[in-house]
Image (cartoon, rainbow, N blue to C red; front, top):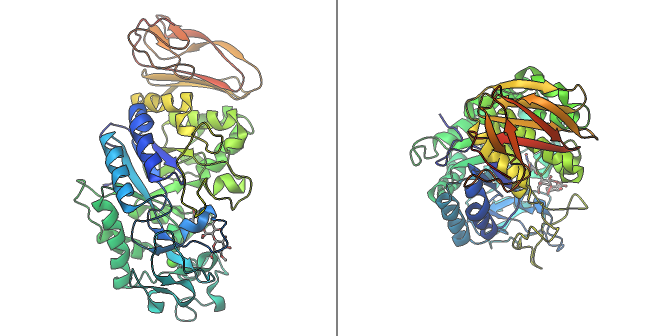
Length: 471
Ligand code: LM2
Ligand code: CA
C-alpha cells in the first residue's frame, strides 16, 4: 500500500505553499534534505487562469485551464529541475492535484499563466480536449438550476454540482478519467511521488478509484502517496472515513482541536488521538494549518507567534499521522497574491524579507524533524503535565520533549526515559556534532532524571544517545 516514508527515512511533509519551483528546489537542497524532511508539498503545477483585473489572487491556481506544466510557479523545465533537486536531496515531491474542476464558469478571462487556449464561459479547454459534455450540468446530473450545491448532505449535489461555480468535471466518464489520469501520469513521469487531492470530497469515491487505477503504480515500486482534502461534517458517503479506500485524508479535526488546546490547556493533549474523532493514524495527514485554514481563523497561524511554533513541535513529537509543516506567505486580505512580478509570476522566496513565513526553517521545528525521525516506532511514555499548560513526554527511550504553553517558566525534575548522558537541546541549538552542542546541554542522570527549565512559550527537546556533549 501507499505510504509516506522516503529514501531518507523521513515522512514529514513541508508544505511550501505557492513557493516557485526554483525556490522549492533550493529549499530541498539546503534545508529539507539536510534536516530530514521526507517530502515537500508543492502548489498545483498545471496551467491556471489569470484573472484580468491584475490582482493575481493566490487562488488563481485552483482554477486549472490546461495540463501543461507552465504555471505561475515556473516553466515545465523548472518544474522538472525542482523534482530532480528534491530527489537528489532525498526529499519526495507531492503535488497539489486540482482534478475535480477547471476554471469558474462565471469567469470571463481567457488568459492564463502558461498560455493555454480555453474559454471558461463556454466550458471549452482546447489543450486538454474538454468541452461542455466533459462537465456535470443541470438538470441531468445536478438538480439545482445554476449548478449550485444547496444541500451539503447530498452526495449527488456535493459531487455533481459546482463548488463555488467551478466547472465540475464529469468524472463518471471514462474519457474524463483518462484525461485526469494522463495529467497525473505526466507528473509521475517527472518523478512526482504523491498527490494532495484538492476537493476530493467533491469527487465520488468510485470515480477517484477509477482515476487512480489508470495512474502508474509501478514507477516507484508502489502507488503514489495520496492524501485527500475531505472537510469533515458530512456523514455516510461524505464522511472522511468513506474516502480511506483511496488513500489518506487531510485531518482538519486535528488542526481544529490543536488550536482549541493551545488556546486553552495543552495538558488535555494527553489522550489526543482517535478517541477525539480523528481518523486512524495511518490514514491521517495531520497539520497545524493550511492555506485555507490560516485564512479562516479556525486554526493557529503564523500570527499566533510562539503558540504556532509550539503546536508544530507537539505535532512532530506526538507521532500521530503523517505530519506537515506549513510555510506560506504573509497576507493582509484573503485574496492577496503571493509575492509576484507584474504579471503574477511568483518571485523567489526570501525568508529574510518578512514577506514569507519560512516555518520549515525555524530552528526548533527543523530540528524536531530529526527528533521525529529518531522517535519512529517508539510509543509515548513518561507523560508529565502540571495541569496548567506545560507538558512533557518521551518516545520510548529515543527522545524527550517538554512544551510550556504558559506565561511563566517551569523548572522541574523530569523522568526523560533517556539513557544517562549529556544531550543537546535541539530547540535552542544544533543536534550534537563532534561532542559539542551549539546551544544548551542537558544532563540526564543514571535514573533518567533531568532538571530542566522550560521558558514561557518555549520548549526543550533531546534525542540521541548520551554523547558527552558540552555546551
Ligand atoms: C480547495 N479545496 O477543496 C482549495 O483548498 C481551496 O483553496 C479552493 O478555493 C477550492 N478547493 C477550489 O479548488 C479557492 C478559494 C476560492 C476560489 C477558488 C477558485 O478559496 O475563494 O474561488 O479557490 O479560485 C474563487 C472566488 C469565488 C468564485 C470562484 C470561481 O473566490 O468567488 O466563485 O473563484 O470563479 C463564484
Ligand atoms: Ca465533482
